[in-house]
Length: 524
Ligand SMILES: Nc1ncnc2c1ncn2[C@@H]1O[C@H](COP(=O)(O)OP(=O)(O)OP(=O)(O)O)[C@@H](O)[C@H]1O
Ligand SMILES: [Mg+2]
Image (cartoon, rainbow, N blue to C red):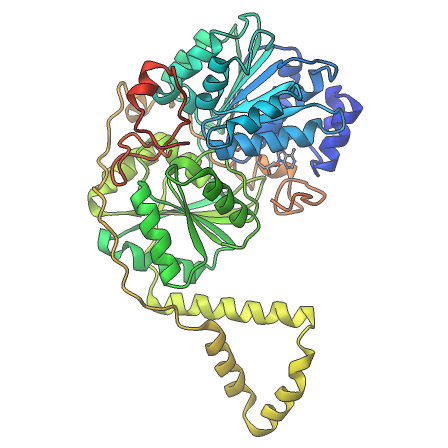
């Protein structure tokens, strides 16, 4: 892969890239950066976790004149968490140049945002709802915007957002530089996108055949009533470093998080009904590891980049294949390995096959973990914790007592008793979940793929470690990164707690008809 010094970037941008620990470019970066630097419109598609943010962020910060006093670039994302995350990456990339960027999203105090806008940011990273609020209040003007980027573009051009995107882009000068990025780009979305682009380049880094991903994908067939206990056994057996569990509705997420807490797991829920404060807290605790299980609706399916997520578990099968690709893409990022498990009831097997067909990836069937495997997993976890403590050498104050005990008792018995104590029996409280309706395979209009032709929009999960993609990152079991300095669809359509996906949006006023029609949407 190309070194960043070969792109003709400004020294201050190169310095920021080095500071972020990026040693060489990823395939999408290598292809997209030169096109973007020539201000040519592009649709960039690459697997989850392969650096699309920097692929658009690097050329963007490189071209901006820091003396600029107006908003000259607009990046739009589907969720608040993603807007915050992308803003952080843009901030890091532009820090030595002194670029001013600002995240604008719902749930945050708008007065605080209006105050921040007075500092004249050159780049705004926002969710459409709140952006429209500011545009209607005239606290954001788009007359001088030269660059527009849609991250998770297929989601942004989906029915939920389309009206808002159109309303916003109408206000941006037509002679602009537009870039769309996503890991999935269904054909109908590509067609829709043309109206916003000017003779775009298609940059795709998706293996022809969606190769054996970095993410080991398996499914477990079970009855709805077996799901929760299976989940607990899976967590015990696999002892994930960090795990994201996807539920189909907010109610499911709340019940799961609560049930897991009752069973002794450090789990918390994330969905669009939470206040922004609660959402920020949950994300902060997950990123810093004070909780190791995040239970979420599709609000966390796209883009979130949390280092250390080793497992994704689809407690409920996602409706769309795109959602499946993005959900599992929360692991296996930056060249690292990951494991994705999907729970499927017998009546949903067709839907799973539908997803396999569209993502062109066979998902391996695995048996339910047995109780013995769960116990063994917990015991291994205890042994690991003991060995870690041993290395740290900070248990000297117990040595005296240990010698006394060893004089009176057999060492194996002693250690086994200590391990049993440490493992503790997960409290076997019964947890009742409200059953959710099984999913039915939804035929897509002109579903060419079932005719065996190459999928028109393909699906990208992390590329094959063994062959192509791993080149930019054998060493760290991930991309070449000197060291990570930073350490790592709330479709509220139904508005109700049980039905519909949870994909909120900010409450804007004078919003487009579709948005108003969805005013029961939870906040994004
Ligand atoms: N050239 C690079 N070298 C090392 N790490 C990188 C490089 N580019 C990006 N990364 C890191 O890889 C991780 C994934 O990047 P990013 O979130 O941009 O992926 P993505 O392609 O947008 O994924 P998704 O499709 O899930 O949104 C991030 O932690 C990012 O900092
Ligand atoms: Mg991304």
